[in-house]
Image (cartoon, rainbow over all chains, first blue to last red):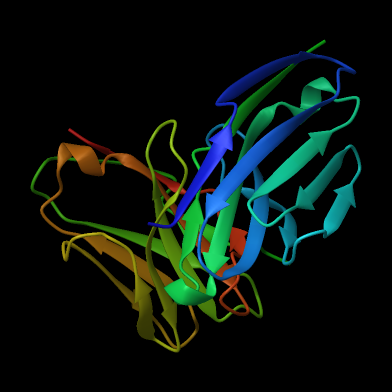
Length: 111
Length: 111
């Protein structure tokens, strides 16, 4: 069964303390992997799309990487405004592009 | 440029009632997807509409139905509401089958 697992479930960091969030997936025929940021009570906000192993994307303090089995979202020198839930999602050629989301990682950056 | 607009923002219904949620996609987007997000969970794919047809469907019962209009706007209908239907309902639009742009959602509470 196709699955997306994110870890850790929650993460508390001091401002400036870099870390990484993990998204592991088991799908046959990965079409694309997506990272979203979601603030409480709001819809997810698109961050990145990755398509193939070895691909990397960057945006401000965030960098997403992709391997054949997992993706990492690296956060460098985070600020309190980076606090949010980060969601990972995948689409598969074998699932008619149905999108599967992980449960997310709740990130809290302490000032 | 308006993004994805959902209405209403909040809704309280009684068990057994029916509800209709509405979504206006981002300009230029012709594909609309609906998701259910329970508290502390990732979004779960309900279905996707393209050219006024349901193109894909997730694991949701027939009580969940939808419609897409010629202007690409969409409705999600849920019949015979259950307490477990309480969730944030998200609409996402895209110019293709990709994950797309999300609205802020409709918070449905069933009592």
